[in-house]
Image 1 (cartoon, rainbow, N blue to C red):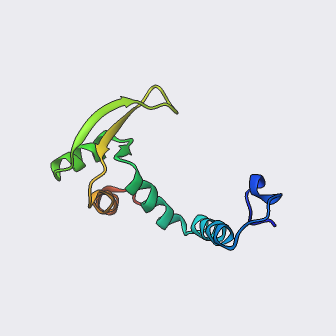
Image 2 (image 1 turned 90 degrees about the vertical axis):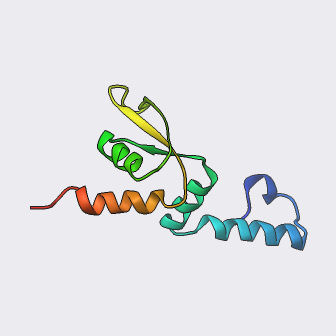
Length: 103
């Protein structure tokens, strides 16, 4: 069966285990935005790459935890915030107001 994990493919599954495996596969097919929201709910922090956005979030009352070196590009910093309710909406608002404008 393609749906089953490799370790489970050779074993016969009980109906309960099969139902659980199918449920996991369906959950993995969520849309990108839903998956992103689920991941953010599970993590306690939100990473921001621009100082201007970090300042905007702080002015709007979101809890700044610390800054750190960006692992992908050590020349830059990332700003770490507590992942609170409403932070995603605030980031979207910021992008609408101050995001890049097309010519």
